[in-house]
Image (cartoon, helix red, strand yellow):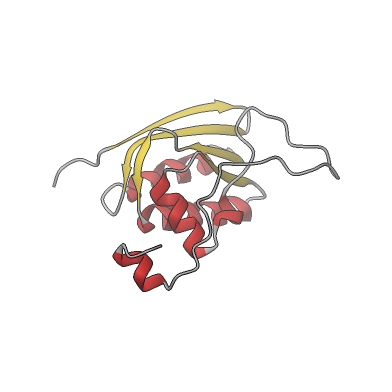
Length: 141
């Protein structure tokens, strides 16, 4: 079995970590994503920012890994946020409506004060109105 085409970089700052993923996230490499994020929790990290800028592809296996990690992080009182998702993941987040659970303020930036206007995050793809079957077959208009 070939090695996953994914590299994981991690930078810790107290109880916060920036995890940068580079390459492709799919059925083969999703276990590496799960393990890296679980390791953050076992090391006492409670805020995990995942930079996806260098990710070239992410399928629903990656989304599943992120959703599971976000749930486990929330159970510990923490938060997991994705930043700069690739277009493939952006489309999946849009189709599933799960972007609100995973997208957040970029790492290193302070959270906005309570009551202030929300800070824009990564731009999501436009909302599709056609049937899902035609979207998945490439017939989207």
